Length: 420
Image 1 (cartoon, rainbow, N blue to C red):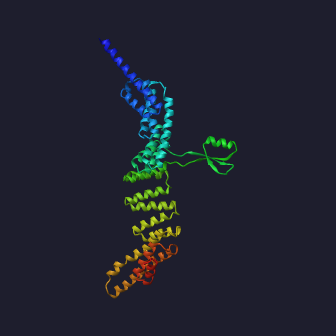
Image 2: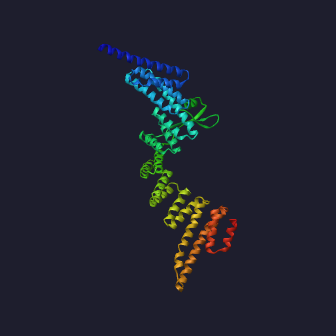
Image 3: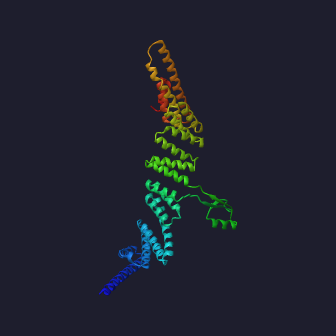
């Protein structure tokens, strides 16, 4: 009786294996005819007991499953990409364990083709602003081919473009973990016929030079992307409100590229956000020393000095910005405002004075000083009008200054220029 039970169990297992083989064959037949959905249905029928099958049947099952889902992915089922990748990886895993490699070589070729399909699909998604989908596909492509770390870099870029900052952060951190550099050698040569420098693969370039249709071969190394990655990581931390992590990332980024002006400015802006005006001012001055001909830097230094009531330093910065860019309207307006604000600062004392001879003398002294400051502010804007005669901001501020000075003639002139 015991022997019969063992025999029945063996027969049962044999029947399961036979059924699975039939389903896999049906899937192969459906796939060959182009019906990947029918192939999928057959594979699902066989999937329940596949873990108990022998290595040969398992590898065949996952091989067919990978091809089926890859075909579904090509036909627009984005979720099928991941299924195909998992199935192909399973083929390699099963055959490595069993010591047999019937499907491994072809599977690796199919994985390369699937990676190309993923990248092409991601390019289409980026083109239609489906950045999240593009990022996910590029990341899957990287997982399929881990040596192609550039796909991970592009995945991060797509995630940033789509505002998917948590995903982008994950990708950027992974890039740093694998030591991604991003630099490369670009091969160029000059076309003898056209005289243009062209870029091409090294082997092709060398053949062209040898044939004398091209000359002057050049190997150019493109810059490393390490600093950019750390900088973007810091920006994402800032975007997510994780300021302490952002500051750490900026320190690391600046250590890699201390002269990157944009990096200094981003770090300065974070300190400004954290209300550390002293550090902000220090970094802005550093940026201006790195890029002294950038009028925006001098203007921003002027703004922070103005906020801190460092009037003379603010004026010096605004004048430097105007020296570089004489038509910098905001610098003109703010420079004028420094004089107006200083003049306004005298009014409280003027109003507090009494009618004694001493107070009247002091009042006259302060009024003359106030009017002189207002006139300085007006002079700045009159000069600005020579190059920007229709600017409404300049005209309005100038009108208000003349109104405060009681200069009715110029006040009416400005009203007319404003069409009032």
